[in-house]
Every structure is written in C-alpha cells, then in structure tokens.
Length: 234
Image (cartoon, rainbow, N blue to C red; front, top):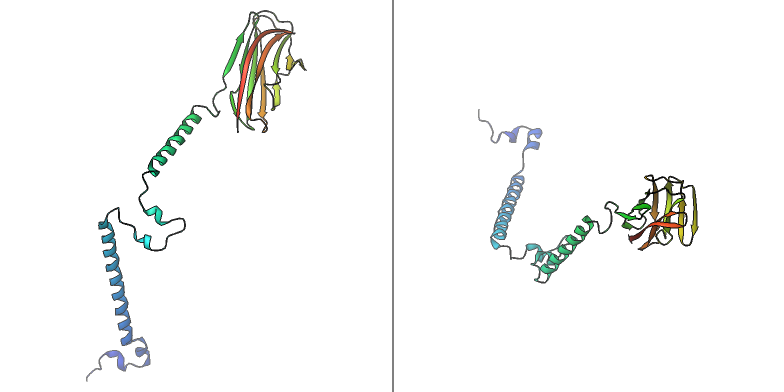
C-alpha cells in the first residue's frame, strides 16, 4: 500500500484547513528578508556614524527635530559664546558666595553696645532683613549705679514701617515724645539689668532700610546711646 505525500492532502477538510498555502511561505520569506536587510543597513549606518568623528553633522540635521531642538544644538558653539558662559558661571558663583556670607541676611543678629558711667546698653538686632520677614530684637539695660526711673527709648525713624507684634516684659509705662518711643520700668539697683524682647515684622512697603538710635535713660537723662542701622531687601 502506498501512502499519499504530503500526508495532509488526502486527510479531509480539517487537515487541509491547517495546511499553509504556497503563497504564505513566500510572504514569510519576503518578510524575513526585509528584516535582515533592515538590521544590516542599521548596523552599517551606525558604524559609519561612529567612524565619521565628532565634527560630522548628525543625520537629524537633514530631517525633523523634536520639540525644542534645532540644528543649532548640533553645531559647535561660537568662540564668543564660551567666554560668556564662563562669565555667567562666575557671576552666579559670586552671588551664591555673597548669600553664604550673609550679604542678603540670614546670619546671627549682631550686638551693638554703648556704655556710660551709670549704665551699659546692649542692642541685639538684625542688620539685614527681607521685605515681610519676621524678626526678634533684644534691648538690655544694665545699671552700674542705682537708677530711679530707668527707661529704654527708641527713635521713631528706626522703627519706621515696622510692625511691633509683642514686647516682653511689659513696661510699667510707655509714651511717645520728641520722636522717641519711651518704655519705662521699675527702679534698678547697681548690678541689676532689664532685657526687653521685641518681636516684629517688616512691612511690605519698606524698601532700602531704616536708621536711628536706641537710648538708655534715667527719666529724662540719657545714660547711653547706640546708633542703629537696618537694611531691607526685596
């Protein structure tokens, strides 16, 4: 008995449905041939581009570019551009160094002292602030001799456009006269001291800074005077 070949030709409709047609084999071979050609072409193009060197224009220069990319990004920069980039880098570094050294604020508050025969005045206050920034100020009066009516006076010009939120301890009395905010306290003996803590905020309208003075007084008599300056940045 001789069996038919190929075996699927005489096995009925089911076997014949599974058999691939001759044209299917041709399409498969064509597809595989195209894939191989594409891989070989891509490899040769990549090798040519690597061997061309860094001065050859990228193939994208002749085609479409992604958003934000142009042919200028593929070309070597001009000699004028390089010094300018270094100059901008130096400027940026100088600004960062100045900020680190406290030119724009943020450092510990300096203390300004003034002494007289009867008392010593110390003012711990910020020298540089930013617009709208909160701050703390400490005013200390130390008596060398008994003071019957100790007081701390601040010029109106120094606290111009500053909002004073809290003050502790609260003075026995306070008033404004002759351009000074005057805060009076209970009598002091020799060696006693008063420290007034003031919390405030810079008003947005203030720009440039303020200047004035803080005085330690015994009633109307000035015992010590400290000159104060405040610089305000945007």
